[in-house]
Image (cartoon, rainbow, N blue to C red):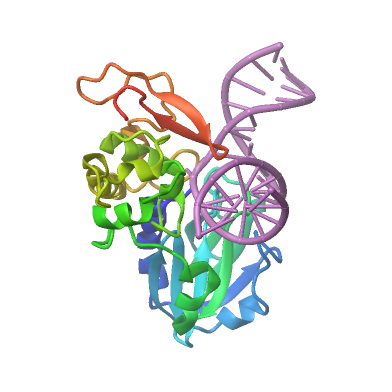
Length: 289
DNA sequence: AACACCCCCTGTCGGC
DNA sequence: TGCCGACAGGGGGTGT
């Protein structure tokens, strides 16, 4: 499911219930997701108060008052919902099988947070808050795409001499942390750059960005900002925590639109689908060069 | 180092 | 209708 806009939407939805609450009890319905849960996972959470809920790349980070942080990744199909702890009342998951409710966090304030993940590509970790940056999963992460650190000079620097397609580099979390398949396709279309193009070809002879590359940072920021405003994209099951659907999928210009007319004003092209590194790429061969 | 593949797992959809 | 392959928003690991 989730790229940066979806994860951030989840964070904003969970924060009001979670931050300031104490985790009273944790039900673990299985011993692993993509990786095993940490040793004594429930015991190390129970009784702890949550100080903050942050996002780094596509990870959610809940800082606990004992100096540990609960790290959560949604993988492809993970989602959270908030239920009221109503005794005797069985809450039905919205169209989802309870068989995939893997973790339930019972809070002290009459609510429970349920993690559902059919494919189990998500993960949960416990790491000392002051050691997160050194963790193997975090230390290599690149810049946050909505930060000022992402600019054309940075991209030119990292793209120089690289033969790989620009799409592959934009998906690499070590360069930019938080982009995924949808928003990379959308950003490249907005910047009118072909996803097939060698990244190095977007760097000028002097090492600076070409005119095309200069458009890319803003295209990335614009598409992410617009998606955030829409509450993310709902392809199958991404919902905001209050149950409403994100609606940015209605604003896709290329993603999952193979055969449709290119929406670029004045362009008469047709959206094409190709496979790069085993994943679908959607783009307009006419206006993305 | 950089790049191409492979895997993890379940659900859904289109074609036959 | 049922079966079967392809594919899905992610990331980590391996081999060349």
